[in-house]
Image (cartoon, helix red, strand yellow):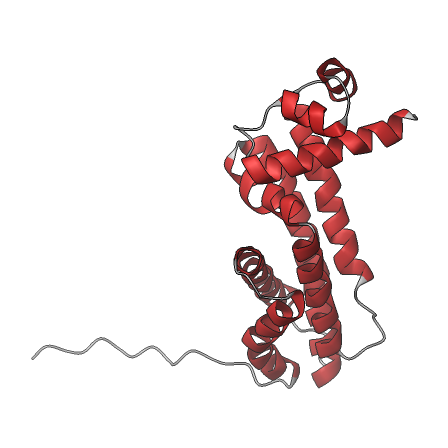
Length: 213
């Protein structure tokens, strides 16, 4: 069997074990047994438990980013693009719960190198969502100078909320990916829709301190 194919089998087994048992509790013996190979072969191909976990994070992060990008058709209206992107995100996390556990739970809580890998994935998704919102908002009210920084903050908030909702949806029986995406759209689009229509919410003016007589 080609090395590349066998490595993918090992990664498949590792994602399942890491996702279900957690990084600390997972053993190389379990991973090797599930992959149908010897433990020395796992070490030969992937060096160490830490390197194996990093390889799992990178593979699954790349797959998630690609799923979101592939799910969006850029010729659609802004709300449809966001809907399709959210649908792709929730569908992928629902279809790959062990991978999502590795990315959302395990990698973030077991050291800086692992957390940094996930942070890079998150930055890429936030940048992609930023461009979706930015293009739609600029087109909606013909403002080519809409501050990208402001929109980037909205995108970061949206991605963070989607991540939390995906974790909840995966842990809640009966919640489909489509339902989760609809919940996220209902949460987000009320505000984003006003932004697209050039009706942003503004905080009240600060009142001067009351004078004590």
